[in-house]
Amino acid sequence: MAGRGRPTAPLVLGDADREALQRWRRRWTSSHGLAMRSRIVLECATGATNVAVADKVGCTPQTVGKWRQRFIDDGIDGLLDEPRVGRPREVDDAKIEQIIVETLEATPPGEATHWSTRDMAQRVGLSQSTISRVWRTFGLKPHLTETWKLSTDPQFIDKVRDVVGLYLDPPERAVVLCVDEKSQIQALDRTAPILPLFPGVPERRTHDYRRYGTTNLY
Figure 1 (tube, rainbow, N blue to C red):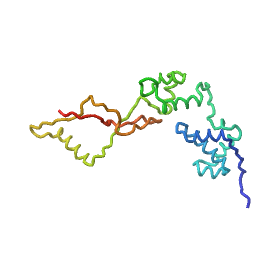
Figure 2 (cartoon, rainbow, N blue to C red; figure 1 turned 60 degrees about the vertical axis):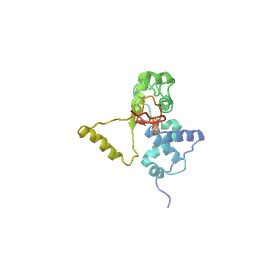
Figure 3 (cartoon, rainbow, N blue to C red; figure 1 turned 60 degrees about the horizontal axis):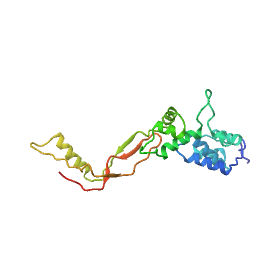
Figure 4 (cartoon, rainbow, N blue to C red; figure 1 turned 90 degrees about the horizontal axis):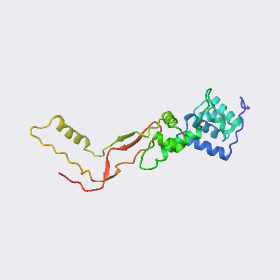
C-alpha cells in the first residue's frame, strides 16, 4: 500500500551551507533553538522523513516540516530568528558571536588576565553597555573566579578532625604550632588545570599551588 500523508519536500544542501550548519550545531555558544534547527536541516538533507527526523532530534514532525520549508524557501537565513516588532537591532548575530568567542577564547592585551566590559568594547568597536547586555544575556562573568579543592589523602577526614578539635576543645597547657612555607617561595602552577569560563559558569581553579622551592620551618 502506498504511504499516506503529504509528500516530503526534497532538501538539497550545498557545501558552504552544510559547513555553517555543522558549526552552529557544534558550537555551544549558539542558542539552543538555532542549534536544533541546524540539526533538523542536516538530518533532512540525508533524505529522512519528517517523522524520522523528529524522533532523532527530539521534536514534533510539524516543527521539522516548518524548518524544512523555511530552509527551502529562504536558505540558511531562514533559520535565524525573525526580527521582533520595535526598534531594529543595531548589533547583528555575527557581532554577538564575535563578542562571545573573544570573551571565552582570547585574552586581553597587557598584564590583564580577564576581559572587562571597557576592554572588550574597545576590542570589538561597540559601547560598554552593549557588552554588558551581551554578557548578561549569555551568563558570562569573566570577573568571577571560583576555587575548589579535592584531597586524595586517605586520612584527610581524620586529620581535619584532629586540627579542628584543637580549636574546639584544646587540651590544657597545650602549645599549637602552625608550619607553612616561606612566602618568598615561588608558586608557578596550580595543582590542577584551570577549568575555563563558559556561559553560566565562572572560571574555576584550585585554591592551592604546586610548589617548587625549599620549605623553611620555624
